Length: 279
Image (cartoon, rainbow, N blue to C red; front, side, top):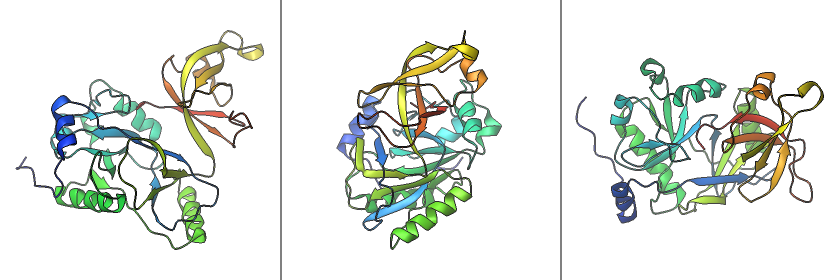
């Protein structure tokens, strides 16, 4: 492979220290959008059904901090700049991707299809509009089809936003992401980054397996979950027979869908969606 190309963004002092210590700068986490948000002042992109991964300039890691076992040739093509994005195979291929990235020994040929879709520059200065433009330059100068910047759009009004959401969902996509154009980078959950989907989803950590009754006797009845805001509730629907026989392990993070919340904050009609390999 030839010499690495020079990229237009260089790590600042905080990023250099993070690289030297092998630390992860952190993740920007989204909140749920209102039902019909005004897109003025936001950049909008498709919400990809992939696996979140942060590149700290030396290693590629899941949200949990665990190192992604990517092939050496994949790692060697990434720049020294810290990057945040989604490992992605395409719409509707999450389960395939999840199995691939969880392997301790990478499947070299299968990784040839994996794209690293960039949507943030961890720790970088300036508003998101500038960081998004820098990501485009990084991906363009890399000249490698497996490293791409997620396409960001400005939309004129709520009707245009609703139209694009419907188009994405019809095509098998999950929904849209809205990021404030003027937002500085900051780790953690914030309303400067919103996810807009026909159905809400959230994550929770498995803290207990509750036994089933009736036809589910002798296997999983429900998962007891704890959300990151401390709320604890039981999730009992959406599982296949195989998942009830071998449920997500204690301490793992799962995603569930819901249709709003009760006055006490408990998700309504919550249903298991999938295990998160990156959390």
